[in-house]
Length: 92
Image 1 (cartoon, rainbow, N blue to C red):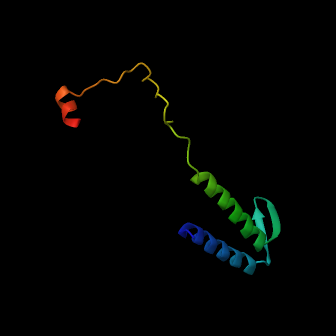
Image 2 (image 1 turned 135 degrees about the vertical axis):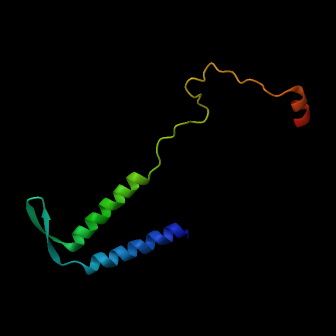
């Protein structure tokens, strides 16, 4: 198993233990409203929101260069051969 997979499993187990130990109801104030909600549900909600935020932030962005695509401004540009005959003989 990969180390990343093992770390995810350990974090999931620890999160499950913490959530299961905190299941008594608490008062939750949100702006002008007052809610009575279980710590279990609140911790679970925060964990899910944090996971989704982590996935969105950690995903790779759109590539700026696609192989095989000619960059803008270089369509008419021709490759110049800068090697001298002596250099070509040395390389060959």
